[in-house]
Length: 210
Figure 1: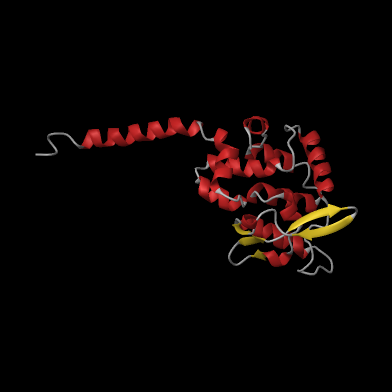
Figure 2 (figure 1 turned 120 degrees about the vertical axis):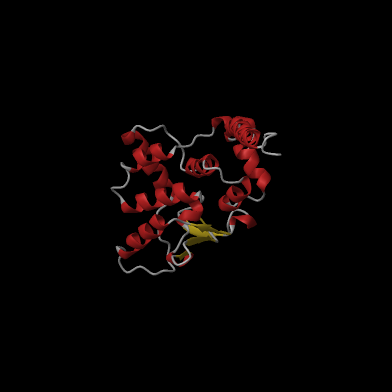
């Protein structure tokens, strides 16, 4: 991602996402999809290709192995975007519970079938509706992926872990895409080093060494 794209990247904080969700949760399918996108960082095509079989509730994971697309009115299940896109993402308990609850309310559902039989166009429409009614800044559906990455960076997770979770081909892609989110951490490094030094300055005195 070039500097121009990085400068124009938009993402939501958790607070903004929660506010947005208040206005789309009236539709169960929208609620579950957007929660998955924000808390896992998966691509929308990966999400729309999911089946119940892709979830492992015991190990709290979801397996990404395919990609959904629609071409000339036909639903297609394709190979993932890149080889590294095939991955297993860990999910928190509340996501597991949410999926179980969603599935329990589906009628005559086959675990091999798509969990979310909607299109990307539907997601764009729902994103537009939620942004308008909630008043949060407008972002794209894909920007929920950036929002997830931003959240992980803010929480201090390593670029390597983030790269694996997002399914990037290599860590360089992650660093190039999100490098502009890291500068605020440099001051924190200096502050922590100062704290470490102060701790030893206070303990390593001539008297203590006698």
